[in-house]
Image (cartoon, rainbow, N blue to C red; front, top):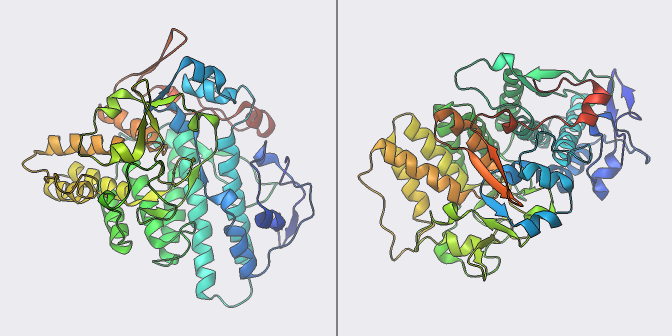
Length: 459
């Protein structure tokens, strides 16, 4: 489906009538999304129930960027597996190619701006709504802000250079910030600081408006918005705020999944919407994520101790002695990409230790690990100095958060802390490297998008 925006009509000076019918039947990712228009009849969302249906389109809002997961060093693929990948973009991203879009477009770019588009539709309808501003109205408003902010976070984490700890973010290119669904709105690329400021604004508005609890877990809540904020603050080196947001989220969402209480030997030990999941979302589908020739990095496997229940829960050992990542928190074949209890514990622990609160950080880490190790052999960590606590937390992030795309975010910021090394891959006897702080830690904007819209490319 191509060219979605152009047929929309203006209402009170803005475009607010768009594609409500697609929210009911599902929407495929679109090529050339920022320059798109529908080829089917339009239905106008007018009521709060209409907006709820629009925002409940899980095909649109509960998918997440995949390419960063392919680019990280968590897994590797055999030469035969590499040759069998169905999309050339997967091969290009795997070797950190300067031109990763042989097909001319990126599904991540299109899918995430689709979310921005629909969120802006909802925001415009709600702005024009003349009925009573009920609790449902505020929930829908908060949901739209959440979805837009969450999409922007993924876009800036993929298509812009990492946020710089030493400053200068005003001079770096960020992403295109679409404040309306207006086809005539200029597609100017904001700077990196402006991009993050918009993310802060959207997510903080969501925190103010969303309820503490909600159902189902495909919808945002206050705890979910706080969880995403903790992710943003961690990646912008605002550690006190990262700790505060994650701890507050864990105080609101109190369910915990003890791995001692699940069948870790099962092919799929996790179920959709179990206690570990706060917000349910999965990575966009690529053959790379389903290939049996994709194996977990041996250095990562070696981090798992024998009494760590995550090893049998997450991985299946092959006849060759390698490991496939099969036990996904999604409860399905898709990689989980949402917000989990484990991530928030680790966000809090790392943020605390980086602000000198090593005792509290260690306590948070022990709380998590007591849910991951065999209870009859688990001994809480003790007598670790600050550096040792940090090292263990970073190890646990690698183990706990595998396959979610979060490792790419971690690498981008840890490169600036001097806590990473050059990544290396070999395909068909050819060695490929990705050095810390390389410009290739930012994906280029697809060339087709640049040529159509005039968006400025990365320097």
